[in-house]
Image (tube, rainbow, N blue to C red; front, side, top):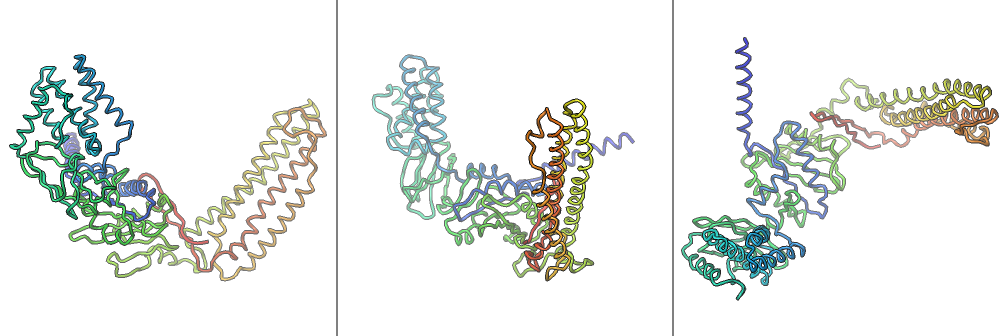
Length: 580
């Protein structure tokens, strides 16, 4: 028996490991947001929350951060922007390295040059964009060659010289800045380029645009460069001189390497802080986003494309596409503010998408669509609300919520009135203590605290009852007579509250919170406190009574408030939809 348990456990673990290992990237969904307005503040946070909710429902989804990083590595990345501080630091390290080389401190020079070279490699397209700086990039690289030669590393020096020529495909170093051994080595490396097998072919749509290799303009597309050393080259294609092209990384090997740049797609794709598509016009977004999202999925393979957009202000649409050819497999529309939809609305959308439903949650009542676009039907859950439920009563969930709030409100109001009894007892003890000892701090503080509790619980009860009114009161075409009676009683109670408060005893000479009190002052505090507390409590009682007829006067006769509950592993979300 013990062996059977161990074997079963081992089999389960191995099976789980095998299952985990077979979950491929293309089994995931890919969220591709798009926008055609200047407002993109909602994109990142909404994409992250949608992914979280889908994961809660067992749907594997690409991380937006990882998609952006993968697209920049395999597709294109925004052109590097260097600040003056970065450029000055790079230049200072190069200058410091020259001084160290002149003084024979090669180790220190290499440290400075390695830091400068790190920036040159990561931002070469930005450094080489300025024609005056191209020569400085090459010079800094050749200083590293010199330091390697001086430290007895000729093979490393030659490899670094080849790297220098990759960084700056065309250009000459500054004259008189390098010893003959360095210029000779560079000449040998340039002469050997003719025999290199590396070929880079750059084309674009449209053609005839400037092609930059590592920031250096080398001609117009289509362009072919041969005799290249193997390694990484950063390609940009630009039709508009005022707009820097996105960077396409080409890893040139021992054969032809093709780079085709779709300039329209490059203008649309944004990858920072997360990947999304930005269009100039809504018509472009509707016409091109599916094709563009499909292009993104070639780099981040997925079983489903989840297109996320804000077609109109105040609404986010999530459309799930899948299959071959792509077909709609789910859709959810939810309301949204300037920074995106609420977490509860996102939970509702995720639930619908995971179930393969097409739902519109933006109206008072959710509406289900035929996913093929052939028509709309009412949601079955909404249609069944009235099954076996009285016609004139509010929807079941709403009515129960209203009754719950009403019960809490009544209990709180009763507690508020009930607290007046122990407060009266505390007042008597306070008065006796002052008469006997001249002061009674404990009973005084108890009397003050009970007054606060009485008003606080009464306020909570009144607020709960007011909130419960629109949820629990039955529907009527006209305001019913009992609502008018409630309003009339409420006005009477309110009048009593005002009169009782106005006629309360005047404020005593000394504060009721002072430690030392006279007998006369204590008696005045107690009488005034009792009057004010009762005045406030009756006023709080009047508010819900007056609210009852107002509900019917302000409520549209056919409007409904529909509560929805969505439960996930991390929590539950309650939303209330409708008009009031």
